[in-house]
Image 1: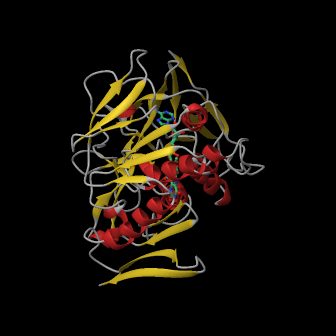
Image 2: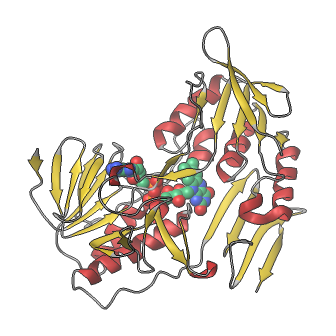
Image 3: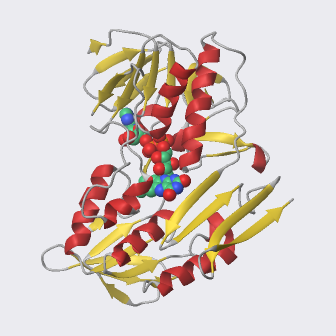
Length: 380
Ligand SMILES: Cc1cc2nc3c(=O)[nH]c(=O)nc-3n(C[C@H](O)[C@H](O)[C@H](O)COP(=O)(O)OP(=O)(O)OC[C@H]3O[C@@H](n4cnc5c(N)ncnc54)[C@H](O)[C@@H]3O)c2cc1C
């Protein structure tokens, strides 16, 4: 085992929340060493375009890479996964067996695509989308496929279906709920989204589950069997079943991490007994944070704005823990997200019922001639 050469602040996860945290550390005057560890070989990039323009355009679209400000002066350790955390010794172990010491640690490891809960191997041609490399592989698959099945009509599934349809593929979108996005934006807006998909020529099969994937004699996907007994022919399928917080590397560390890294309202990381782990904070998709709009219920939110805002807020808490600045402040930003489907942009601000117990929630989408907007508002 080799030992890393410097202490300072360590960020694990070299993506949106991690980059935003590093920026915030510098913006707030921290001049000590900052190290960012990422298991992908790439500098930070934005994920939202991966299900949209990246799947449609022949060339890599501009603006996918996240700008790294000049003068950030961070040490980037890319292509190296964190595999262990020792909170007593304040060290993180990397896949190459390097051990890094830290004064303060920010966990921003995001999510991974939820896998198919199968016990046997899936045929070739059944894929997921989370990373840049996944997007390039899916784009190559779309170039040669004719019939696509997307399993899960959430944001990701809906956007993948829309992009594939724009490329001219036959697309079937399978969803167990009664409407796409029902849990995220409610039944009324969900029905509108279903109509959008159908207008674009996508077959939407709601209230339906996938029971099995059928392989041809070459071992490649040939079709998908549905819970209503029908079979849909397909040469490509995407599992869009949501994300699972990337917490495997925290096993045995004492950090509470079921359903996401447990945090207090100031984004400080907690043990299973609810006590704070000194010098460790978390941000972004991986963090499970008490949500003021849901009576303090801890929620992990997989939204872009949440990662940006929590990255900065967690950096401030980390600095406060190190004796810089004032006392840590609770994270109270209102959740929000957008999704681009066909020519519509769906926006949601607040938490949809039944989760929310306070405040208001609104979803906006274009309607009619696409120039006016329809808004559902629910207030308490
Ligand atoms: C295809 C796609 C489209 C999206 N579109 C939208 C949208 O339209 N609107 C919206 O609001 N949100 C959207 N999102 C969600 C948004 O991109 C995420 O909320 C955001 O990326 C979260 O940022 P993060 O930094 O917390 O996590 P991530 O972006 O997941 O980054 C975590 C990083 O940590 C790395 N990592 C994981 N484990 C380790 C480890 N052990 N050691 C080192 N590194 C590790 C990961 O490889 C990754 O690089 C989309 C997401 C995807 C995947």
